Image 1: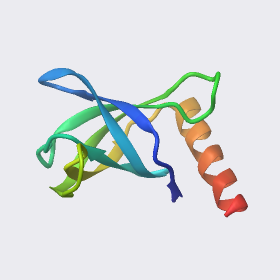
Image 2: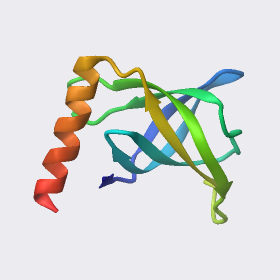
Image 3: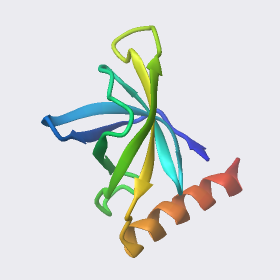
Image 4: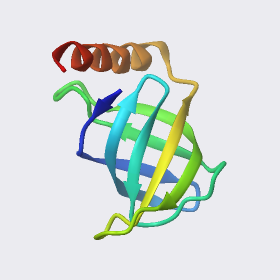
Length: 104
């Protein structure tokens, strides 16, 4: 798992994409902070800019949990499990996660 703290775009089925803050990333999913609650089971689109200049990793995922995270504008913590990553996207994600593990 890699801990970050950068903002991403989170696509929601009922609204324009929102910003969310990354708590951690793994090959299986991403932990986020969001200004709004997102119901468990909601399918979302995540755009992660992991490697500057290579474009974002685009992933669909399902919200597995959402809980109150008081403090500031990011009031909710949620976990998104990735689903159906394309092979190239999965490889970029895996390479970044492995590289960060080697450094830490």
